[in-house]
Image (cartoon, rainbow, N blue to C red; front, side):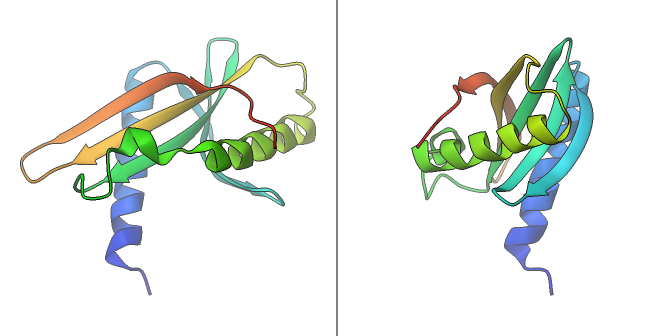
Length: 123
């Protein structure tokens, strides 16, 4: 059974993907999983592979979506990304981490791409 939160999360991802495409990203994979976890979107922009975390909020009750990718989440995404690059035999490929914030308030929806939101995080 799908919860309202899961439905909203999927809607946020769909809005994020549309915004990424509009901004020249080529979507390579969605909800990629390996033994380290999951990355919402893997895309290519020019010669760069971009690992994208999507954060959706329907209100600012828990703070802005920009603040939702903490150090622990960054480390997890980094491990998944390294596993992806190794699996695809692209370990030398230029890569970066972006975050897409989807803030859907009562009156409007705002989608923002934070390019190069964080560096490879070890821990």
